[in-house]
Amino acid sequence: MAQFKDFNFKLLVIEQLMYTDETLTPQFHLVDLLRQKGLGDDAYNYAQQYGLAYKMVPEARDHFAALHIDDDLLAGVEELVMDGGLQVYQECAPIWDGEDDLFDVASLDDLALLPNLRRVFGSEFLTSEQRDVLVARGIVAD
Image (cartoon, rainbow, N blue to C red; front, side, top):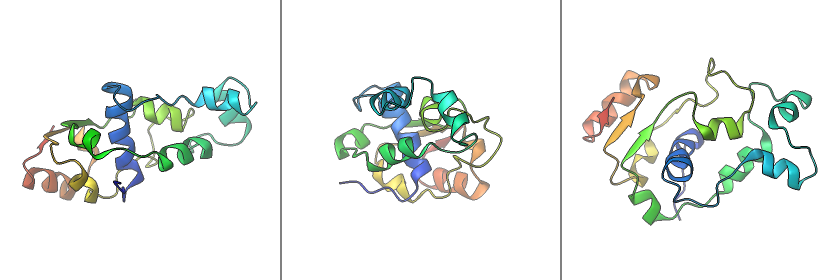
C-alpha cells in the first residue's frame, strides 16, 4: 500500500485520479458527508459556522488521509496540475482563496509513487529547488 509523506502532494494525485480521470471512485463530496452526519447541506455555511474559513474541514482531511490508492492507479498518473481552483481543495476547504500556504507541497519525496509522471502543470507554485528535482527526474515543469 502506498504511503504518502506529503498530504498536499497526495491531494494533487487525488485531484487527478478522482476528479479529472474519474478512476478513483467514489468521488468524495463534502456536502454528501455533511448530509450523512446530519450537519446540513451547505459546505460553505458549515465551514463558516464552525470557524473553518481558510482551514481544512477535519472530516474532509480525515477522509483523504485515510484514502487508499492502489499502485496500479498511481502508475497511471502521467501529469499533475497545481492550481488554487482544484476540486479537491474545494472539498477540503470550502472557504479558501488560495492566498496562503494551506495546500503548498512541502516535499516531493512522493514522486517515487508515480513512476510514469511526465509533467507538472503550475509548477510555479513550487520552490526553485523542487522544480529542479522535477527536471532532474525528466519531468516537464510547466
